Length: 163
Image (tube, rainbow, N blue to C red):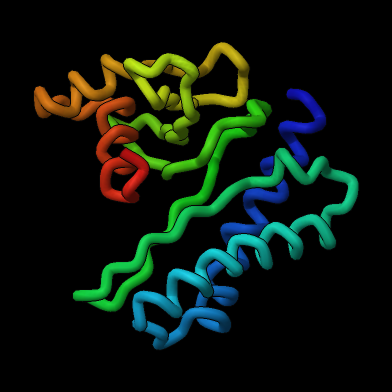
């Protein structure tokens, strides 16, 4: 395995072990939608800065990402952590999901084609070839009710207000 992949896995495991303590410290009992939105935005920056300070040898742009979703009804925080190394600069992390015992990191990026403003990606391994891609197919699968990585990426992007 590549050294950068081994380092990524080490950093990801550290993040998974420490994220609950950070969430308790920064976001405990804060359920005001506006304040929590601002705090979550800054929380991402704090986590990235902490990881960069602890692991200065690792390129900052490849650090594992985290995505938080607040459920105001249950007052719970759903967290999702990037599992696979992503070297693509313009991919925006949506979530990590398990589908039929397979793990996927879901991303999107803007497209230059006005007919399909976003392209969705599902990474299922560290290799560059371990990726699914689609735009119109993601939307079609979503509207047909299929439970595929790209349709879930489309659904999450829709819930997050990207679409």
